[in-house]
Image (tube, rainbow, N blue to C red; front, side, top):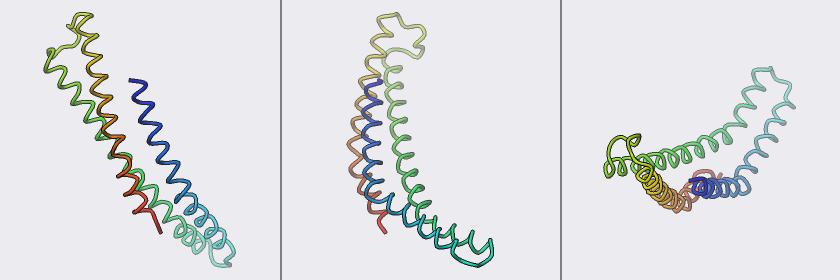
Length: 139
């Protein structure tokens, strides 16, 4: 199970790193420069705050889009893992606390295998997620 989690985490981290290098850093740089220019103004504090808020909107949108995609992926993986559990309970009985040691070992092995398959299936979705993210976040 730990290996499965590591594989998914590495794949998602790689996606986020690529997104950061290719899109997010530039958006962040532009937001900082824009905010710095707002502070050159002799306008009121409210005017400057409004200007800075406006500068940060593209970055906030980017984080929101990324959060939505990753949250959806996580929810899908959780549902898949729950389906694995449900299938095993249907096969072996509704109360895992009553399983023998051998049954519990078999139960855990089969769930681990099923969850690993869920992870692999969802990692294979990352290229499409990446494509959507790059498309949504380009200026």
